[in-house]
Image (cartoon, rainbow, N blue to C red; front, side, top):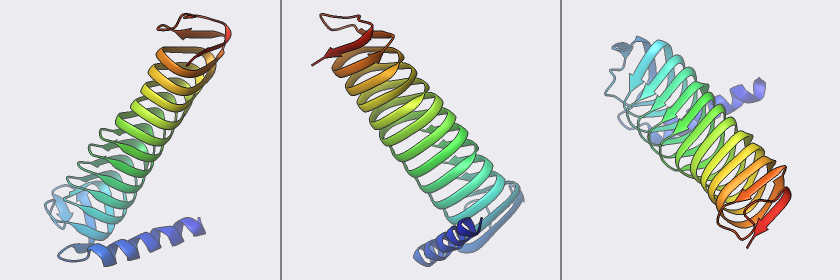
Length: 215
């Protein structure tokens, strides 16, 4: 807890200094538009949203039940529902996390979604990345357009995988690397599958139990 507080205040200080300009150093909201400053302004510092607060760009520490930013966010955001209209850089933790732009950092939630490209760690019961992911995706059900790194969960789907799938059911359109699970499926492969059922549809040996490979 002490380390988390130190991290939070460090984020507030650094981000406030970097983005102070015409921004407000503090934002307080009951239920937008009952808030200060108004929702078209930037906040560089601390945001407290008792029910729901919305700003333009947010830099620093955001705490609340429902947190929203129309533009970008940089810093630490913790809430039940978090929404960012553009890019997010930092840490985003909540039950529902949605970023409409690119994400760099750590996104964690029961439902975690990034529309753009992702760099870092995404974790959730359901985790979805519509763009390209560079890093790690941990989930119960996980989907990404393309991943370079590790995708681990119960059900994993990657359009293109460059790295490793680890789960009960692993699926990819094409993978370069390694799939480890009870059921592994791909159309194209340059790598190895290890599991009870291994399928590579575009291979002379399209099905083989225990281990399958194509290069």
